Amino acid sequence: MSSPPWWKGTRGEWYVIAQFGLFLLIGLGPATWPSLPPWPTWLGRVSPVLGGALMAAGGLLALAGLVHLGANLTPLPYPKDDARLVESGAYRLVRHPIYGGLILAAFGWGLWRQGWLTLACAVLLFWLFDRKAHCEEEWLQARFPAYGAYRRRVRKFIPFLY
Image (cartoon, rainbow, N blue to C red; front, side):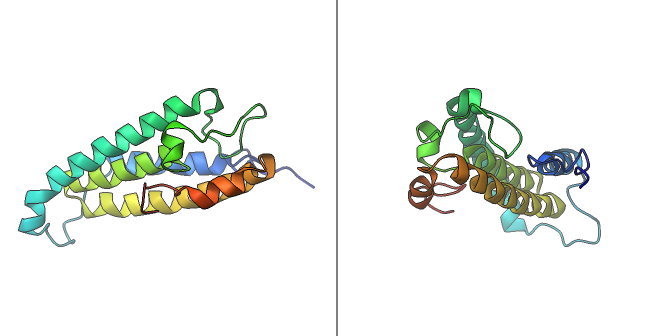
């Protein structure tokens, strides 16, 4: 049996490649196309404020996740060999605060830029992180017996919502 290609790997490497591609599209890609409808006037007034608030909240959530994850941090969904289950700090609010924070920030950036394409890429990022988190949670459940109870009591990405 042959080994998977380097980009797919056995620890979820392809998720990391795909997420960085989406980060580039969200941050540097076109906000919209001329053929898409213009941003509604009322939305144009509130979207920079709402977008800024989402970016700030997302940045804080992701940063708190980074700080509390500490030495367990890896871009791959497969946990490190010496990993421990973190349930404190931001991980009391959501199981994946870094993913959730980046999702909020991506939607905030789309609103700030008033970009239909940016928002579409944020939706793709949400989908990708949802798939990546699903894979990661299977590995975490296999590694940590207590993960099932944690998973049942704590939301996935967005506190109180999802």
